[in-house]
Image 1 (spheres, rainbow, N blue to C red):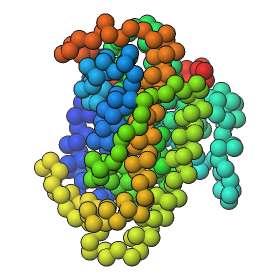
Image 2: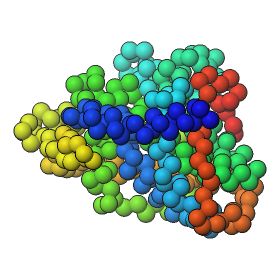
Image 3: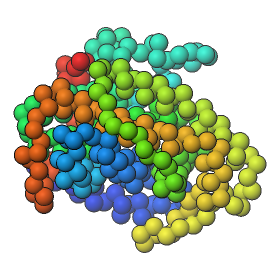
Image 4: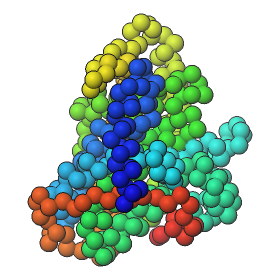
Length: 335
């Protein structure tokens, strides 16, 4: 209980601290991924991909699923073991070798990866694919037990980690362009662009699909994200080298603070250069989230969720806290 109270206090302080610190584009830049707006939007849209046996229940609890999609970000700086669940630095596994494919060096299965690199090393470079797989397993168990409070908690937070896995800059140690003099690009790509343009995106994605091997599937999404890293960085470098510097930034009022942001003109030019990349990653995240919810439900025997639909009777929120050093079996490959 004391830990939960501490987390709530920390969450309350985050926007206040950012209000004081955010005097330029770099302050609080990694406070959230996809931005709070993006994560909420992605979880909301995922609900509409669900089949009839799930849709009514998730629609009735949509506000909860949306609101708590951002809780993993809110606690990532206050809970030991949380931060590494949001990313994986694939380039770390090339060890400076040119032309290396890091996916050939990292075993997909957790126990194999631990045996090769040690758990501490894996956590130092991020564990998002394995954490997503663990969350799918936990959600399946919650469905089996018809623990609806836990189903909602896990669904909301699983959506967050899947969303993170779809962000290119969550797959590289140059996560904020700090190695290439591009500080601020993290929030630019995953927060500023979706906030400006996502209402123009076509989110018709069809229905959720059953995923036979979630671990393999999420590794495929990580590979796609990593393949986009070069274009994310190089295109912004090219734009920055030719764009008038006095028109790159503008100021907007956020809360009680006036903050420096990438101008709409600069943002629009970069967005066009990316040729729909942000939209594609968001759409993939939406369908993957819906598909993983659906997969967990099917694997649990498709329990009848209609009997749990009750408007206005939402569960008390209890965050899914990671432990700082779980034994290897807690992230084993549940397939």
